[in-house]
Image (tube, rainbow, N blue to C red; front, side):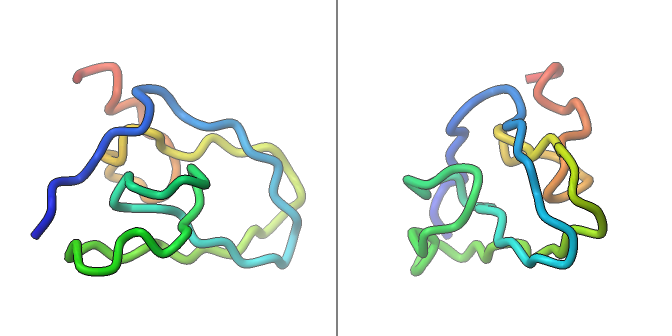
Length: 79
């Protein structure tokens, strides 16, 4: 398995649309952070699909170590 990258230590603020599905990058190698661009192929990681319940601003994990995937849980503060 490849090593999980940390594209940024803090979260990504993202506006999501109600009812729309998103793929959050779990490997950290995507060029379209915080979303998946397929860079995980061959790494052993898979993106996390989530559907926005509301149209709102959310904080998606940038360090890729959250326990509340794909949302930031503050884990980056302990790294």
